[in-house]
Image (cartoon, rainbow, N blue to C red):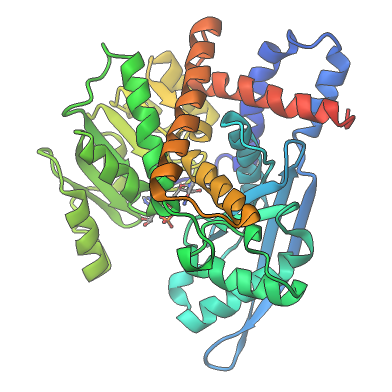
Length: 422
Ligand code: NAD
């Protein structure tokens, strides 16, 4: 398996990313002690929820799972973050992912904090009925601590709008009234937003186009070659829209391997094939995909795909992080030294939570937007976030990740200070 999780912990990586911008941010605060106290607070989740949840299997036996949720920081608004069903889900992983959610919401300036949760399970080993019972049990477990003004879950790896629908039903049964704004990424029929499914991929392509406009000598849009690791919700829609914009997607993969076609693939055809046969016709490993001589490399699967072991083998001109946490801090440093730009996850994939925010706004107001409005508003937010970060990159001579963290961490710490938490 290419994605190594043993050498570094995801939360350790997240804290290293924070530490790297502390010296740059310190100058902006006259009360250094207060600033340092805020940074220390930002290294621990406000609340960790853990519970063994048990469901009945179809064969009548029972099976238990250690369910978790990390509510990291809510200084800027209610906690917000997905629910992941994957064998590698752990407390360490959700702590990291909830920290990144906190930073991400601040990067795009939407009024949320950050959270994340999940269950260590491979959902392909469960029947639909078992998956439904598991979703109900998870919602029951978090119900006392979530809600439109508390914590708003959404889909993440291996969870989708159907799972959100089951969780909404379980939650509403428990609280005794309708509460659609408690979950985002719902089916349209239950108050989901137009455009949410493709929002993360589309937002990423919007940012990529802005990046290219700002770096015209490095990359040309038309015909630029791209390799995408992961053909899930995020990877597929990103590759789909990138292809529409004139990029040449030469490789794409799932957990079992990748398909490489130097002349360019038809992404929709690859997806149809996967839907029909359950897999893609792999002719390349995920390790090799990362090392292809492309213009843009897009990790869109899981954490720790690019590590110090393979960072020197990356041949792309730019790494565009559509997954959360795909580059370790050590790899980040190597890529920076090699002058390979990394467009960080907290900006690149923020289109998803941005449209989740619109879904929440629509649920709270009871008025639903046309798709055109959703996508136009998403575009505005993504372009503004990119511009702010690009200016900071130029002004402070820092990487895109450092620039995103400088802007976001300042917004979070200022909110903590205004509330008198430090
Ligand atoms: P998904 O479950 O829809 O898809 C994940 C894909 O990654 C699948 O195609 C799977 O086969 C592939 N994969 C798994 N392990 C892999 C491996 N070792 N090598 C290569 N491919 C592998 O999940 P998703 O929603 O597309 O999420 C992907 C990433 O994007 C995650 O990091 C997630 O946190 C992040 N993200 C998702 C959203 C969203 O709106 N869904 C928003 C922001 C960030």
